[in-house]
Each structure stands twice: as C-alpha cells, then as structure tokens.
Image (cartoon, rainbow, N blue to C red; front, side, top):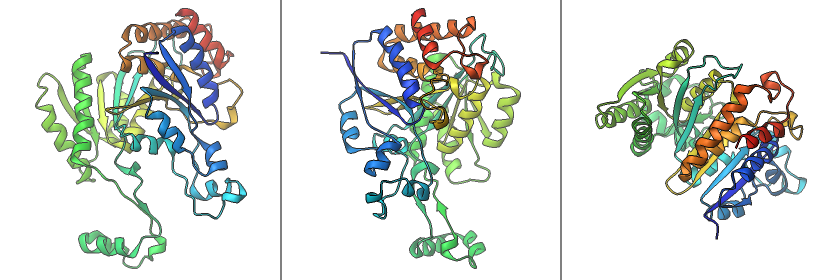
Length: 372
C-alpha cells in the first residue's frame, strides 16, 4: 500500500500543460504515492452543469492532498450561454469550483510564498523573500451576494444602518450587494498560522494588512485579534498597515517584510503584487490548507489562448509541488526540488517565453527533473 494518495486536478486551459510538467517531476521524485485524476472545471460545467462534481468531492475525501492547476470562471450570463442546450434554462448558476473546494473542505489558510531566485531576469529585486497568509474561506469571497436586493434584506439594512438613507431613491433592482463576512475564529486562525510560520522560519515581523480606518467592523475585528495573538509571540513584531499603503511600501521596500497576513480579497490582491516582484505569476505557488486536507496550486489563470501549446512557465506548478512535499513532511525532497528549480533558473539555459527564452513547458520540467 502506498504512503500517500494524491489527487491531480488539471482543470482548464493551460492547466493540462502545467500538470503534464508536474508529472514529469513527480515521476523523478519517485514519491511513495498513488496519483488519481479528478474532474473539475469548465468542461464539466458545460456538459454537466456542475464544475465541481460530487464524484470529485467524494474522491478528495479519500486523499491526503491534491495538486490543482487552473480554472476558468465567467460571469453568470456567459456561463449560462455555454451550457449544452438541454441544460440551459434550468436555473443552474455557475460558482467557482476552487472557491467551493476551499469552503467545502474548510481550507482556511492560503499560503503564498514570494521568493526571488538568483538569475531570474524578471526579479524586481534579488533579496525578496516574503510569505503572504490569506484567509481563504470568508470575507468578500464567501459568496453571500444579492441582485436585485431582496425586500427583507433591504428592510434589515434600513433598520440597522443610517448609511442606507443615501439609497432611498434607488430601486432594489438597481442595487447589488456583496457581503464581507468575518468571524472571530476565522480571524484568529489565519493570524495564528502566520505567527506560527514566522516563529518556525525565523521571520522577525508579521504585518497585518487591512483597512480598519474605513472598514471598521470587519478589518477592525481582524486587527484586534492580531494584537491579542501577537502578545503570545513577544519576539516577533506585529506591524499594522492599510492595504493601499501596503501596495506602495511593497514596491518601495519589499525587503523590509517577512510574513504578511490579510483577509480574503486584500490577501488575493497583495499576494499577486508580491508575486510580480519575484517574476510574476509564473513563479507564484500557493497552498490551500485545512486541518484535514490541503490543495496546492499555481496561482495563475487558465490562459485559454495558450492551452495545449506547452508555452507557459511551469515553475509556479513545480513550486506548488515543493509546498506539497513540505506539508507532507517530505522536507528533504522539498529542499532538493527547490534547489533544482533554483539551479535551472540561475543557469538561464532553459527559459520559457516570459523569461525571454524559447523553451517549452515540458523542456523546463525535464531540466528540473534532470537536476534531481
């Protein structure tokens, strides 16, 4: 019996391209694992009306972890139009399967390392080594939204918020509402994971990135809980900054920061900014981590115009494997993989188009595998 059972979920667009690259490296690593393929993505929405089929949910419940590649998401009107004819008009509503995956399995920690590798011509600076912790299941991505605004929701808002007076003359069909929901537990556990990581890896600071001066209740709750947890780690400084200021300071002084922690949308934004500092989304990996399951992925999209061309940079996917190995406790394998990636980047002989090279996605994977 194998030690691990790992699901492989290519998803959409270039997802298959980078998953093929991942399998080259996984084969060379020779991890004691059974790899099973799982269905997820736009294809299954179009032909089944379900981009995250129940069979995939059931399969993931039997796995230790998963590798996921890329997803396509479109607005609800476009999604409806792409269903097969017999499914149209049945009231099916598209929801991002990766968001549902995170919520259904309570993968509340989104871990996104942003590390500059020597020799990467796309680095903003060569000394950047920071990590973003993004709350992954709540906030603006919780999916509690309304349009048009229901009468009972409007009535409740008018009762409890003086600010609704500004919308007295606006018809309910002309109002769309997305809620930003935080819980105390949700704030506590993502902040605690950030401090634990900083403590384990020797980072001197944790920076909480929010906007409590304007979004007082939700950002305020996050900041207050961060201050409480900070007291348990007196050797680690807690820095507090607003999301807009953070974008400026990351560009100005990225080497000042170690571990950043934020809510769902702000964390999404700030981690993409941080990724660009170290070469872009082609180098940005992430882990969606819960207490029972973890799903590792590159953070780039499905880039359908490149699908099947094996043109895109697979480094983010290979770095996602590194995160997976660390999570599984295979730290020696993880270190060896990161070293192999670093050597290929430093030598500069095998580069995809984004790095001014002409190597294919699979060429890069083979080069990394050879280093292993």
